[in-house]
Length: 108
Image 1 (cartoon, one colour):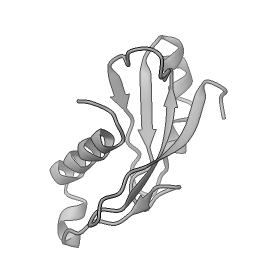
Image 2 (image 1 turned 90 degrees about the horizontal axis):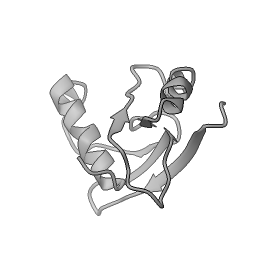
Image 3 (image 1 turned 45 degrees about the vertical axis):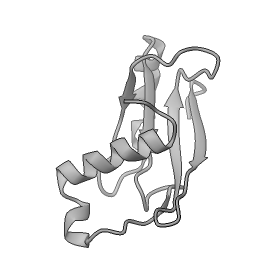
């Protein structure tokens, strides 16, 4: 993987919502304000690793990227307490990603 890409796991769990989110990111520095975040979402049956060739050129242009592994993919763990017919509907899926990113410390 390109040296500009960092990999980390962010634990965040509640009593009814266990989550350990694995992300790939570029241009993150805890000592500076975070620039606008760009979230790269993988499809089924891909992983965040699918973005490995896209992240470096855009990161070198100064953007801050996060590519999370969705629940059940890669090193992200946790389950949903929702009915399965709603898990893959696009609006619900996007809402979950936003909530999960906020749980991991990223602001909207």
